[in-house]
Structures are given as structure tokens and as C-alpha cells.
Amino acid sequence: MNALNRNWHSYHISFAVLFVVVLQLFAWLPNSSGEPLKSSLSTDEKLRLGERMYREGVLPSGEPMQAFVKGDLPVPGTAFTCVSCHLRSGLGSFEGGVYTPATNGVKLYKPLELTYIRFDRPAYTDETLAEAIRGGVDPRGRVFDHVMPRYLLDDEDMAIMIFYLKSLSSEFSPGVSETNLRLATVMTDEVSQKDRDAMFVSLLGIIGSRNQYAKLISRQSVFGKGQLVLMSDDMMNSFGQFISLSPWLLKGPPETWRSQLDEYYRKEPVFALIGGITKGEWKPIHQFSEDNHIPCLFPSTDFPVISRSDWYTLYLSKGYYQEGEAAAHYLNNRGELLKGRPIVQIVRDSREGQALRAGFQETWRDLGQGAPVTLTLKPGEELTKGVVQQLLTKEKPGAVVLWDGPAALLELETLAAVKNRPEMVFVSASYLDKGLWTLKEQVRDFTYITYPFRLPPSPKETINPSDPLLYLKAVTTKEANQMYVISQIFNMAIMDMKRNYYRDNFFDVIGMIADMEVPLYEHISFGPGQRYVSKGCYIVQLSRGEKPELIKKSDWVIR
Image (cartoon, rainbow, N blue to C red; front, side, top):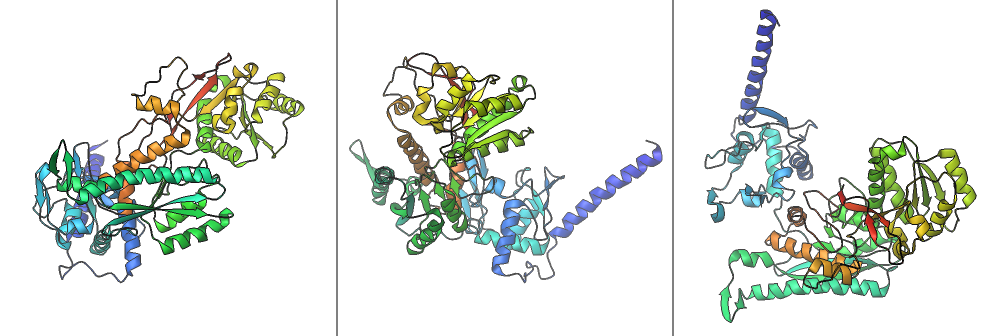
């Protein structure tokens, strides 16, 4: 670069820096009256626009918010959103030794004193809050951490942001009174009365235990070792209100469920839905939760809604869809065996088959692979040897994915008898159910099984009742183990909320729970915005012999 070009290049850099500084100074200037500009927008519109700024980092104009971190490093607000640190409820967090303060109006506009980290500050005003957002300085004049973005907002946009923060978590959510927290559980009538009763009684047991603690706390004391022990305010706040649970039974076809849910909610607004069970898709209940902003915690369903953006339902897993995902990832990592050959997918036209197909097909596509060759079997249709032979001869697949239920046992025998069978045929453990353990020996060597649970104990493994994970895994049902997960997470969440009964806070505190080991799944993990806590699956085979065991062909891989 010659001297002229170097000078010109330096001039552009200097001008760009000067422009940014001037822009930032201009954004900090108040209007002539010293008050935030009054917006002509309606209340609902200001709340909508403010929420988008807070959650997505997008200005009312539709442009990304602009910000600086570490002093002078420009960043887009879409990458450094308020919600990513202060959380959806605006109540902040304390995690890993890092304190993130609350940003909702109820907290901001009151003095704050945190004795456990020796921190205090005066109440904010509109002016000092604007200075904090733009310049990173609190009302006492302390400078925020350098990772806290300094946002370039003009007075009109700042007024909208402050208006939203004042409304954020300003009133407790519906279903909360001074003494009671109302919950409901949703069950559908195609589930047997026995299974519905088991679900409801288990949930009542979880809530009953919590209410016993609340009863003690209401007296502000507990007895320990024969002595009266006064409870601290923090301990009292951890247990909270008495909890009531209502059963919401949905009858008839799924298209009528929404009106029934609306009527239940009209008569009795609840804070959240907990548990719940259906043999069909959870979608109508899921959409009801989304539309009314009602948290739904761990319904028992194999057909959850698969979404990357919905917020208000937290599932145990993706159900059948997750097994399809696992098969696609495993095959993608075995490219040397496929050698560029296609995948043949044989799918039973059922809810289970279609969910498995969607999980496999969508993941396979996202991995950059071509569409599998798919043969759909109608209900009751048999897979003949001639059809299988013709399909394999024509396509010469690298693997076959067989998404069928108990009929897959005979279909695997058909595959074993034809020529040109590939080395790998995949089936679903959930769809085979107990039939998994009846696979004949001649099909075990080429049959790979998606298995989304902890592996069962080996016959040689000693069952020790003092090891709760191993004991529960061995002696209880899948449904009982699901209740164990609900019990653990629900009780921790209610305690960690510390009586801040805002629905978004319910899932905010769950998102900060540490990863856990539980009897049903190998591993469950949490995080802000994550909607499926068990994200893994094994690929296994069945050993030979009269008492077969599951042989791991892959680790528990989290997706």
C-alpha cells in the first residue's frame, strides 16, 4: 500500500470511529424537556415493540439494535439480547458466581441491597435507567461489567424499552392468590381410567409433600431434634403458597379439545399445567399453552410438538421423532459403509411410523444427505418377500430403516431371507415395545435398534436398593420414572422461584437447573429456551442366547 493509500485508509478509519462516537453521544442527548419522548403508539403496540427489543434485539423500525461491548467493540443487538442474560422474566440470575441483576420495573424502581454479595444501589429513575442502558453506569455511578452491552437508542426507542421494562413481571400471573397456587393436569378420555388415576394420584402425592412443607412454613418454624428452629426469610420464601391441583379431562375427538380447554380455563385460571397424559398428539394442548402463555411441565406423550421457537411446554423428550433423529446421525457417521448408496425407508402409515419417519427424514436432510427411498405400508398391509427383493435389487441401498411395530418382527425375517440385504437394518425400540426381546437370532446380527432410555441392568448386575438410580431403573415402570423426574424438577423450580410467581420465571429457573442423572434416561440437561430435557439415544443390538442383553453400538449422544 503506497503512502497516499495508507493516508486515505487511515482517514476512513478515523472518520468511522468519529462517526460512531458522535452517534453514541447524540443517542445519549435528552430532548429539550429532559423527559423521555411521548410515543403516539397504543399501549399494546408499545409492549409488543418493547418485548421484541428485549427478546430479539430488534428496533421498532425493524433494524437490529446497535451496541458496544468491552468499551468500543460494536456488536449487533440481535447477538447480545437482554433476554440472554436477564432472562425472559427479567428477574436475572446468580449462576457460576456471576450475578445478573433483575431488569423488571418492580425491582429496578426500588432500592436494592444484596447482603450475600455486599451490593446495594438506589432506586432507578427513567433518566438513570436510560443512562444505564446507554452508558453502562448505575445510579450510584458504578460502571457495569465490560460484557454488558451499551445500547445506542434514541429517545423514542428508549421510551418504548423503559415502558416495557416497567410492565415486565409487574403482576403475578393468573392462578396465584395470596395463599394459593392453582395448577391443573390435562388427561384425555382415550387413556384408560386406571392410567389416568395413576397419573393424578402420583401428582397429588408430589403436591401433597410440598404442601406439608408450606404448612410448616406458615407457622414460621419447624422442629428439629426436639428444638424449635426459626426459619429465615429466604427459607420461608423458598417454599411458597399452598398448591391445588385440578383434573381437566378432555372428551371426544382432538378437534374439540381446544374449546374444552378454554372453558376449563375460563372457570378456573391456573398458573401452570403439570404432567398430563394422552395416547394421541399433544398438539392441541400445546397450542392452548402457547396462546395463553401457560407453562406445561412434562406431559406424558410420545408425540410432542417439535419446535425451535415455542416456549410454554417443556417435554421429557421428542418421543418417536428423537429415535428417527438418532438413526440418521448414526448412519451419517458410518458413511464408509454406505459408500454413497441410498437409504431405503419402510414406514407403517401410523402416528408412530410417521413420527419416526419425520425425525429421520428431516435430520437426514439437515445433514446434507439426499432423500431416502420410502415405501409406505398401509394399516394391515403385509411386506412380502417379492416386494422387498424387487426394492433392494433396484435401489441397492446402503441401509434399510424399518419403522414398524410388532409386524417388524416378521418383516425382519423376510429381510433375512432375501438377496442383496444391506448390513444394517434399523428398528425402533419404542415401537417394537416388548417385542424387542423376541427378535429371532438370525436377524440380530444385522438389526440395529434405537433405544432412547437408560440401558436395563445386566442379569449379572447386583440391584442395590441404596443406589436409587439403579434400584428405580430395575423395579419401577416407565410411568413411575417419569413421575420421579416431574417430582424432582417441580419441587426445585417452586423453591428456586422464591415466591416470584411469574410464569416465565417458572421456566427461567428450570433452565438454570444443573444437568441430572435420573432412572429413566441416561442424562437430562437444561438450558434457557431448551424444550426437551432428554436429547439422547443409544444405538444397540440384541445379543445371542436365550436371555439376550442389549449391546451398545454407540454412546449416549446428545443432539
